[in-house]
Amino acid sequence: IPIGNLGRVMKLALPENAMISKEAKECMQECVGEFISFITSEAAEKCREEKRKTTSGADILHAMGSLGFENYVAVLKPLLPKWQ
Image (cartoon, rainbow, N blue to C red; front, side, top):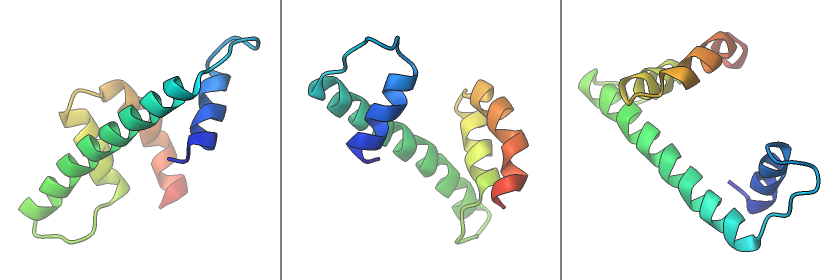
């Protein structure tokens, strides 16, 4: 994820006068990348087991649920039809 986009998202979660260091943005960028890899790897494994080559949004949500991120699934599942 581009660091500029990530910085904008971080600012939305913080008080208006908060400052975010370059190091904090870089750290968050690394964490987000690891999180995405973690979820994607789990979803890809499901696809391999089912002998499919294409990973779907439903696969991503299934991976998130199986990895313990049910709260994210609850928020994202209603949005899935919009992106299909």
